[in-house]
Length: 342
Image (cartoon, rainbow, N blue to C red; front, side):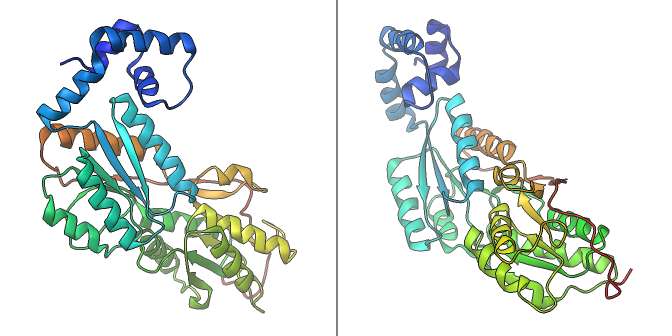
């Protein structure tokens, strides 16, 4: 059977270029497109793709299920996954669930009917019932979860060490002298929220301190959550001097709340985020944050999905990436105050 590598060789271009032309994604010059399509015609490639799919029961397609495409983290992750999949000659079907479990279930059934070669899945919920059901139906299907865990199910997982990231963020603020540190997280049953909060608590405990629970609030990983909760926390008579936002979108909302209340960042309030998304460089002052290696995680997920598809069995392994503190201008030393223990 003719492969995408054969087309690339005849056209004298890269595999990713052939993929872009066939998938009509990204920019490719007219001359290059003509070379690729001429090679496709000479090799009868598209008919061969159909024949291969029928014989091998493979479609060279991956399904990607994410909870919120408006979340910049998932936007960057989707791009990384699509780019890497294209290098393998694979297409990606994107499914956005809006954090709706019924919609999620519909998408899973849709992908199964389409005969995708694997499913890459990201969910904020640790008790996602749909994953349990799909693993019972199709234990053979390459199924990888990225950025989360589901309790009671053994899957191939691509994770960042959220607890360590939460610890680094909180320790950074403690080292700057802050003791009144707020924590704004996402959903209560979110793996990322839970682990990042554990890191927050652990840092306090290691410093012989106890966090103020009235400064801990959970909602969603969205800008409006950071804004609404931030405005509430910053309006307290004894407001936090620092806020650890569990993702950069929440941090952006805190910025907006601080600006409306005429609170200067970082002179009067230190803010730290999580993910090191594009938001971090856009806001002013630039955001101190915990870097999640989004692109590396997305690429590794595709590599693993292809390997599982080729071998015909899940590895059920966990790959954990380490986060790192990216210090910018949104955090600073707390102003001297007799109420802060040394």
